View 1: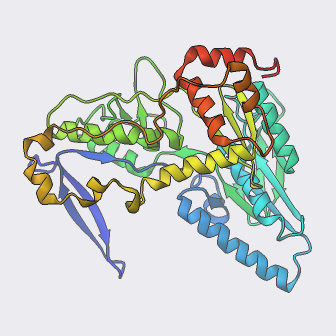
View 2: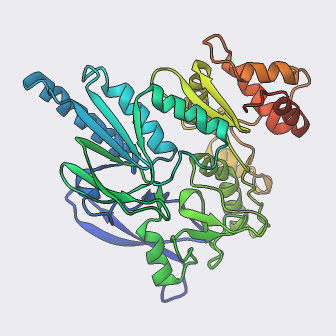
View 3: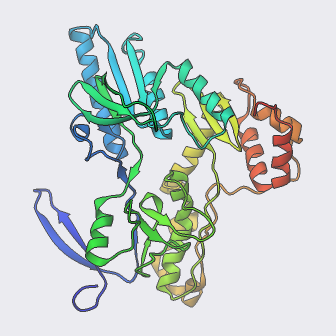
Length: 410
């Protein structure tokens, strides 16, 4: 609140010349959806100077493209006889995918004179997955020649080397230097400084150790009822469950609930709860038209996984394609909506998800379903396999039967 008790957002606006002016924007309800920044990018010496951060994604793409052009120029001049050594710091899903993507993108440019190292602070990749999924991932990393270095933390980065030390508990402290030509910083999520500023200046409730904006099950701030937050920037406090991990799927699925609650709050109505799913389909592209996936503890691999990933991503992007909006959304005029009067006020947003699935009466037997999910050949129809996964999510008994008939190795 300002000095007069009015709720305002203070923003800084830059013009084309770079001049900055401050403006106050009044509000009744506001949503803070600022995402996250890359962990330790500004605190580890040399990281911001020498590495390519994964956030924001637009800068990552631009930097990779720029480095690729420089590589091509060097190849045309001196041949780049020593090749290139890409090091990816951070072995979560993003780091794993980026290491595979760089192998696919630059291998042909360098005539296989490309080495890729993935630095992991843990003793194994993707600790939350079961042994079958981790084993499948290990096989993929070996297949695409990704050198994974476990139990290492980065101490500093120079123009030519990444200085690391052991992160293993109880082990002997060791130090090492890893040479590199390109380093990608994929260390996971960290709260933006704005969250801390709002906490210091206005006592906005944030998690004391990480700075995530603390919200309830309605995505509403614990300290300021007129403030909402969703996505990476927030931590959902619920007595019955932990806040979901920082993954895009949770931000996407919070969207319909967020917009519903913003309008409900503005009208003084009861809010609806957001119930994040316990787990989700994880898909890691391998860069060659195949992908690796995990769901219900089942490792999934092949071209059909890539086709499924592409389909899901395209479904989401279609939400932003104006040509694919409903005719009413595109064509109903403001005047027509105004004429609806109170009837319009009573309408609610559709809080169903963009990929909502209705269970089918006809489906594969549990045995055939399991066999289909484990296939890796190019003839698998991704839509059929995806339907099985969604049937398993919708029907607990069916899921248990499919898993029961899986090989003992799963």
